[in-house]
Length: 282
Image 1: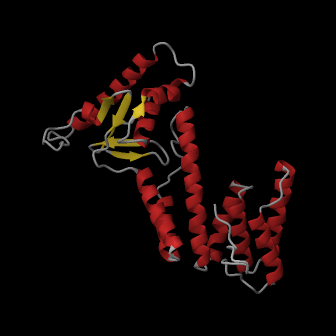
Image 2: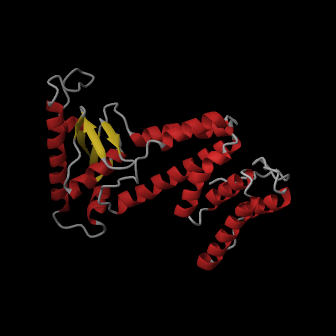
Image 3: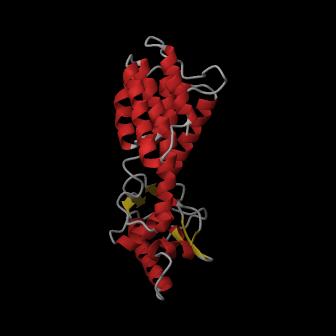
């Protein structure tokens, strides 16, 4: 089974799409697909579908949605007369793919692909490379990980509380990977290449201090020192006005270093002399 949730939901068994069009079965599949090969409880599925006030028929209705998903899976399995086989050699059935267990259901991936798992694998490799000081490898791995995203997670799924929570978690993981990838590329001296991307990002996330600090560094290293200082002032004004907060210690440190460095000092992005990193990280 091939599973994609980092954008539109796309689940395929035997190369055949098994994603339903009806909103409620689609929600069920989305949650099962995200946690493929792990039990998703009836309680979690019920909360996703109906929140804290499920109807009396909730369990029966959920069983109906599971049946509809199995019908789609069965059609996909029938496309290949040999069918995917289990260890014993017997063809898998829809009940072998979408399994009923005590208290819930499991979607068996059968060793297929999952864009979330691949994203997590690549980001882990990227973070390891960052820790080892291999910024070129880190940038490459993290760029590949971010390339798996084709839009917001579950972009075409009507989300309940469970999926909304998972969407926020995945988006935070994406932002962390983005931050580290930009940090790696700044350390490789690619500041000019990053300017256009960072301009868009600080507009999209106006109070994200890590991105703002990276934007300041990229501007300063590109010979645009006054703009780097101006972007700090714009963020400070926004934080004070909207949240009553001053910029973080890390961001203030970057501002001071740019002020002290002068227009021709690019700053190295590593330390300000007291052992702390110049560039903040999520």
